[in-house]
Length: 209
Ligand SMILES: Cc1cc2nc3c(=O)[nH]c(=O)nc-3n(C[C@H](O)[C@H](O)[C@H](O)COP(=O)(O)O)c2cc1C
Image (cartoon, rainbow, N blue to C red; front, side, top):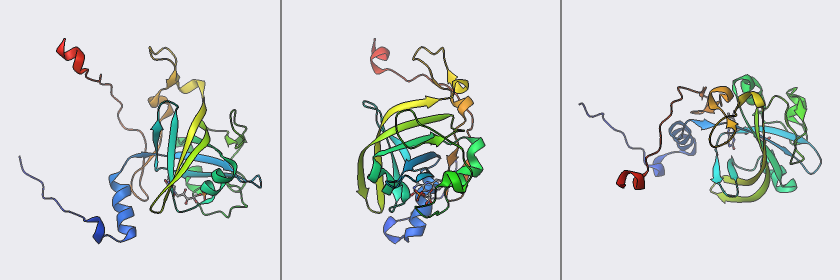
């Protein structure tokens, strides 16, 4: 077997732009959370955030990172609520449009012609085309470098019945092959869902029995 040549990139030698490129190309794929929020003045905002992850399972909590203070962070700080919609292939054009730097008093729902639907658990609406949305109450915003990590407790999920796997031993949940979450790779590279396969998790105790 041939050994691949390797290159090392010390973080201390990278410009901020180079480090961002290395980060986004190596921490990939990242699912795209399409985040809605409402300002104190009542302007509804919608923007994609792919620096997104699960933070706690009990209670259910998720978090996303805003690099710098953007409208979403400002709104969530002001009103304490947001929704995260799983971006799917039908959303791709609108997701990208909502990443434009609209001023805070302009709503992406209006500017990009995106129909809004009232949320169930929180005030900010979600895109009417959403197939899977997590509705959240702000838990904490933690700062790391230029990152503002917004953590929210999930108050509830709203999921299209069409993408739910109903008869699963662990209960109904979105079926990835039907939901088809979009993801972000490098700076301008995106991806759709690839092959899905199943594999049981090994259990040490059972292997010793
Ligand atoms: C697919 C995608 C993912 C993005 N992910 C992030 C992210 O994780 N963090 C971030 O700060 N900006 C991210 N951006 C850029 C923001 O969406 C963009 O700065 C937007 O204008 C922020 O909107 P807001 O000011 O309304 O919150 C992403 C853009 C795209 C297209």
